[in-house]
Length: 615
Image (cartoon, rainbow, N blue to C red; front, side, top):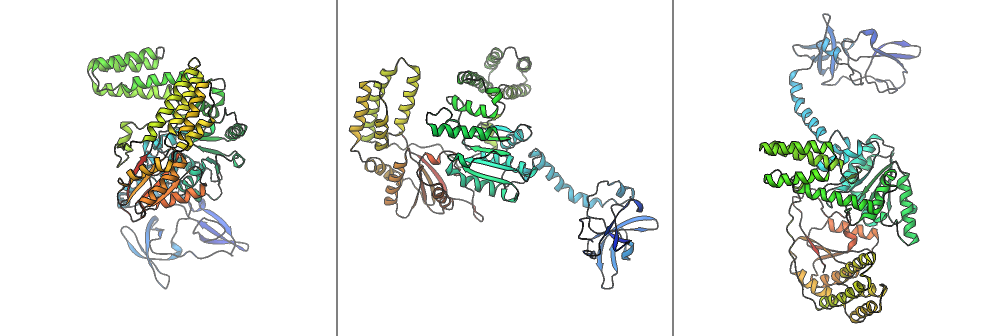
């Protein structure tokens, strides 16, 4: 064997000046003059060692034979066993295949060198398993080589992106259905195809550690030492750069900055749009529904396909979404188990909504015929065809992939251990007073803007924001102080909020009774996440819980904390073995995965409990 090439063992057959000539054996059907011969230097040449189970070939009575080495004696005698013979052979009479893959098996068949059926039978279960895996993963090596359980809706999303020559998509699955997993599968497949790929990830600060952990532990990105993979915060545009693949998590947060009246935020969106347009592949992740978020959704669509949506207005998109929602309601009621009269009504509604579409008309006619014939099996297939066609053709955008938590999906993507939430109602004089104050402001604001639909919409948003702050008197006072008033009456209502709540102690009025009630709900070795409406309440509630439960670990997850501190808190929470409480504000709501896997050697993790504090 020569270390100047990777061809494996060859037989020494001559000299070429100072070099030696090696002949490489491929298959018994190959004539001697067809064998590859190469001149190799003496230096770097070493003897190939015949070891037990080495497959060898030789000619006996003009016929090729094959067998395996059983033993090589100290005198160099080689004992070989074939299918119907065994004995000693001389080394010079033996041939060993080189290291190159076999490209033509005909030579083996012609020489009668087929393996024993026993070996084929032993390999067959393994081959069948491999073929089933490849079929399930739609041939995606990136999915098969990842450390995760494969789910059809995630595989479908990844496959849709990868088979498209223009890989610019919005992954919009509902919360908890695995958008990060879909992005990870796509990323790993692209890295396998191009190990020198450049990747830019733009992420919320509190999710960078989670993404790094997921991509390293499940998709093994550290294997690709030549790839350029960069993680950046979504509030630091100076760290962003175009790449072969751009991944943006919680993309709606950046898209919402497009129409900001603050120069810094508008500039951040401009930087995001520039990086997105100059990256050849784009994956945006967002579970935010399109309905009632049309401006943000339109900005994301323009980044995906600027040519199609260049002239689309928010109102145009709103009309399209309304039409799509109407179709969704009809399809929801199109169930093959419904009475015939109801099904006829649903089919008629679809025919009216989609008049002019000949393909739909044929599908609807097939369903009507099956309904008339009373064949429920054929009817089910026809309805499935209608659903698939409408979902594909009448989707909001062909580059938006969205899976919903339907009953069918829950059979394969089940969330175990989840129970129906139980309300814990607390009476509070503060809430009574806050409700009275906010209602007074609402009446004045409605009277001030009753003739202006745009102002009414803005007022409704402000009211929703105020209600969310009603458990935090200090934050509500700050809101009222900065809220502009359109009339004297509205300003008086805002001033009353400030005056009446100024001397309210948030910790005593809110955090203390909540902590007292929660302390009776916690169980031994239970992992608890408590969501609070504001960061201030997180601090107060955590302090109260520590006082009431001195042996319980209480952690805090706040918007105001540094990402490095948040990541250490999450690591501590993930590794918890005894009762642990994580008190968090909205910073833990978007994208944070609390479905930790058991550690090695563990059969069961502590129980999880989720508490949401709201009015």
